[in-house]
Image 1 (cartoon, rainbow, N blue to C red):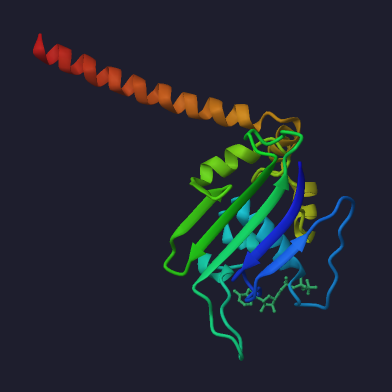
Image 2 (cartoon, protein in one colour):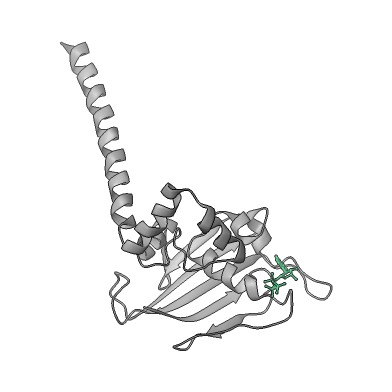
Length: 199
Ligand code: ATP
């Protein structure tokens, strides 16, 4: 799996459509202070499902939408897409190319897409779980995150190893199954109550 392209429109400082193609090897992004280098990594984390806007250096969700400048009006939505080469099949969908898109309107409405088909945020989390790009992965490390990882508690650091080792997916499935079991037990209790009432 390789990240091929980033497209962004209305995300933070990107009032015009931004398109960056990533070739094989290392890509370095350089520019003066405040020119939007970190906004690019913020865009990548956002489309991969980052829900905590503070991790994107904002205070509220709409802070990621272009707020306007002296010459440009504010925009009503932000949209980011990432295109992955999936010819190695690492992402479990039957496509050689996978495009994921996230859109946020100023009204607060969010939309997610996988290859232009509307999906839930959970589908994006599931798709990237254990690929190293999941929401708890450390594939995007900001300067302060390095300190955070070094100073984290052993249990927190263990989550990073679990993501890297590829067991996050199973942990999530176990959590979901336990929740369903609990629901079923509650339903059974209610059925037993009703049976007792009838008898
Ligand atoms: P440095 O080298 O100092 O770390 P940088 O190149 O990483 O800088 P960023 O932090 O990515 O720059 O970009 C900051 C710029 O993005 C600021 O000029 C800020 O005003 C602008 N910006 C952030 N959010 C928005 C928004 N919602 N609308 C318009 N501009 C925004």
